[in-house]
Image (cartoon, rainbow, N blue to C red; front, side):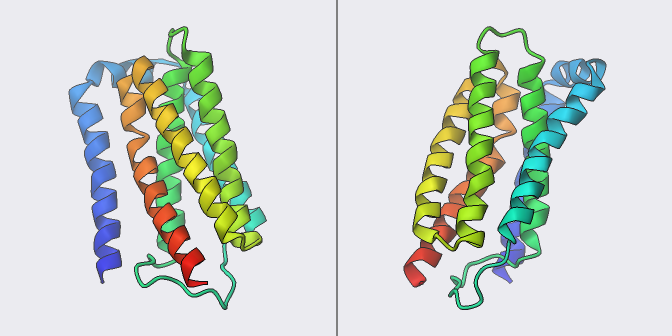
Length: 184
């Protein structure tokens, strides 16, 4: 029961962030509408493709003998949440890509590196059942996400705010990953 409540809370948080962006920076949203729609679509498809490919390669199923922590969300929730997060990541990267900031190349490089870390985490965890390595990898990913949020914030705060649900989900994933590592 609490898992459904936490999923609803997470989705409400995402909706609040998007609502905040729409109502508090409508000029940014208007500018996004007038820019190249193809760049926006590509920006969204990149993280979706990374996630889909990683999921296909990892198999996304845990070993049957793995003991799961009692606070693990139901399996159907993961693809829903990750799809939302990847879309938010794509919009966020688009906002950076279309900026005129001289820091744009560095910010997008950090974004690309964290996507690579994101890609390999599920393969380490699900495909190879390397829970300890996956946990350390996830901690590195969280560090990269923090750096990305900081670099995005300096360019466009909205782009940074869109990454906050991703950071929170990865922190929760680290908690789950550590619990699976300890239990097994």
